[in-house]
Image (cartoon, rainbow, N blue to C red):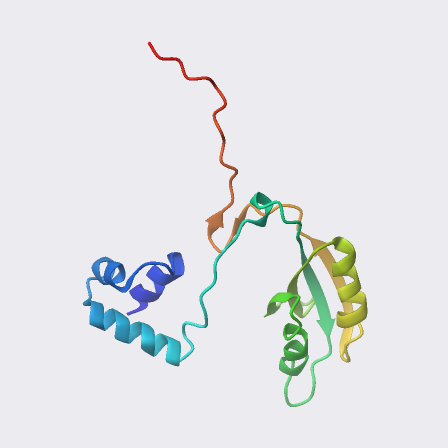
Length: 160
């Protein structure tokens, strides 16, 4: 049934019927598997990947390295939970490197808004020992999707 998950990961808009054909299963087997995956939180949610650069909407994405002191009995989890609950935080990962502990990805309207979030909300958290902010200048690929500008052919058509 992992094949169903792989199909959904590629495109969550496939219908149950399309997934059944692609996986060689019946439609009912697909529906039951998806329902089971959702109940077990294997499928954690459905999202749409938007290339905001093509909409004209200004957004700033930043990757923040966060150094923290783990808490006795809960390790990094409690601190991470406080951080990922902020609406600006789009992703939060525990890292294995020795340089920092968490990678936090946030979005804001401006660089100043992101900087204010880091200084006013993130850096002041108890057990946070330091941060390093990296601003994303351009997205080439995100969640397996390549962002390419569609080239418009402005040449005039000639009919012979």
